[in-house]
Length: 420
Ligand code: EPU
Image (cartoon, rainbow, N blue to C red; front, top):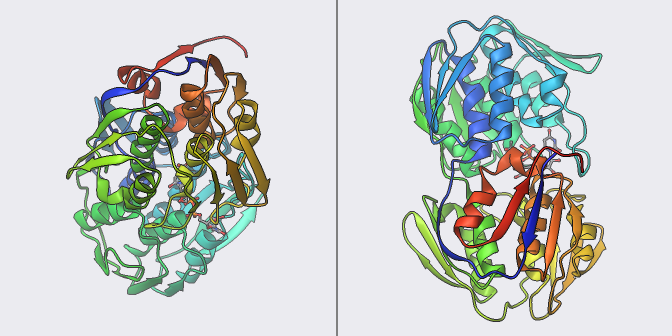
């Protein structure tokens, strides 16, 4: 298990290039199950969840080679229709195998994802939508067993906006018979990237960019090459690092349009921003203003930036509230931030953050991906040394984050291979 050792207090200066989006790759990769052949997925980030998804697809007979940031995927020899527990327990996005397998091969056996590090994350919407499309679904000893001859179109109205359920339903509907209507569909950029790929594969999808999608099922799709969108959460995390560390930084190869909610909040907090079509420059002020945020589905403020925002607000000049409406329990970073000197009261899903003058380094432990990011950001700002333990969570979703931060002048190093 690796840990990071950070000497805080360095001002950040310089430019970093943003990698491809984890949550887009995790949808694009299983979409290759929908048609036999060769695919190239460009701008695929090199991180642990992508490796887990590769291993999962390989167990099904898919071959995958990485050439820098391009994945070469060949799905000619898919011969197993199962997502086993050992992969699903590492990564819930394995559930994305369900829709493509059942619609293309008529059968799928996918281990039921359990809770995640911060609480329950059900998959009922995925299963209900597949049932509506005609799949027979049973639960057997921890596995979801789905069977269908050919799925049939249906009207699916999601009670909650769900990224994963929208992705799974889309992938199932593209090969179903007839026209499926998906209402209250998620419109996250990662879903738009998936829609782009499905359309390039020959899928017929109307209403792109809106919450109502109409999918006219086709008999067969063909492989396609696509480029993964930039990771808006990585870009946001880097920008907040700059905001915390008196930064003058530039995030390149990102899509500022995908970051509009965060950009508005950064401006409210006093950041000077210069925004181009594919870059954002941030110049931090001496004082950070307190700014309330409430997470919401896209284009609202992302839950995946909630922890990092609390880290920023912990040194703001005044009090702010940070409310998570997507995941009520996603606050495992709060007690750890308090160990660094932050003053935070947590009342259910609302954190009241009273800005302090300084954070002071300590040993802290990360519990999930974005919590880890928040602890590193706070450690960069804190006086003295911070040790962030269990950074394997971070490696799931950030490509070489410490190298990117080092490039900006941060004093952060990875210590590997010991038990901490
Ligand atoms: N929900 C249900 N039932 C379902 C599915 C979702 O009640 O069947 C609820 C969830 O509990 C949550 C809300 O719907 O309250 C939204 O969850 P969603 O399904 O959109 O989440 P997800 O698809 O499981 C993706 C990202 C998450 C990100 C969320 C929300 C991927 C692989 N994961 O998860 O990313 O937090 O959307 O934006 O795309 C991360 O990258 O750190 C991460 C956790």
